[in-house]
Amino acid sequence: MPDDQHHHDPEVPAKPDGQQAPGADREIDEKEPPRGRRNTIRELSEEFEKATGRPAPGIATPGVYAATEALRQMLDSPSQRLLRDSLAARLSPGLATFASAVGDLGLGDSLAARLSSGLATFASASDGLDLRHLMPGGALSRNEAFRIAGSPLWERLQAVDPENWRGERLRRLDMLEVMEEGIPLVWTPSADVIRELLDAPDAPTRRKMLERQAPAVVEDCRTALTDVARTDLASEVDYLHDCLDSIGNGKYAAAQVLASSVLDTILRAMVRADPRLQNTKGGFTFHILSAQLPKATPDTLVGQFRAYCIHTSIHKAYEPYFGPPVPEEYNRHATAHAAGPTQITLANALAAVMLAVGLVRELEETQRPVSPAG
Image: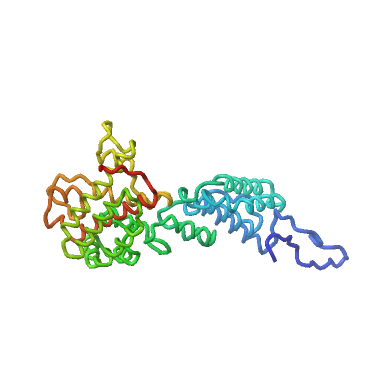
């Protein structure tokens, strides 16, 4: 029997004197659940309080408990901030109907008020907000969102990802660790190469694996560059193709040095086009630039996650170098000032080119202004 139907005592035989036994032909008060259900409701109440840290709000049936707990998870779970913050425009008509119906169920003013208030908050908090900028990133709440909201939402979320992530189940938090080590993963390389990097046990092993995958990475970079149509980045695209040719010919030192120069050139062009990135004299310092390029964290919003991941790789590439020792991972300053077998490697050449390609491809996607030197 559905939980929202009334429950009656089983048929009670009449007393020998013809009088009805107490409780016969009487509906049980919902405040006193029928025998056999009382323990279940108590257990549910205890479970709710244990899970939430607060008393169950007037639970009358297991069905109401389930609805209340589902609502709590929707409103409180970090992974469900996606719904609270960005899907109300789609869902608010249905939620409003549900909220209105709650008041007619006879569940008690307190519970109905709580549910209705929560649903109203959910419906109004994000009505009309831009989905691209409001969804939590980190540990892939997107998959839960897909199950809840269906394929149209999934398609919209896919558009937020760089092409090499789309439709792929990739471990985002582990990807952050790889990028913090100096290997860029935005727009290039392919998802298959990313998975191999994630499965490697440590940073040195990842660099060796990247070198083994050099031909595939080079082709991935060429593919990413084919989508760059901006004329103000045409020279940089040509130079990056030269870098890829050099790697293909075994001249990775030339590729690493040229890619580092391209990266520096692009960042300076971004600074010239944006006063917020400039120091007081209008010039370039990475200290000022880095303040405007926040790194990605598990809490970064999905709409920002892609760009912030590129920022993370830029921060790593521009870490101060005063050596020795010379860093083993790619470092722009060490490339310029400590050329040698520790810094100039195939893995670092690939990392430099991947970062420059990813930045150029991101500028194509966002159409962020740049001001070339000439």
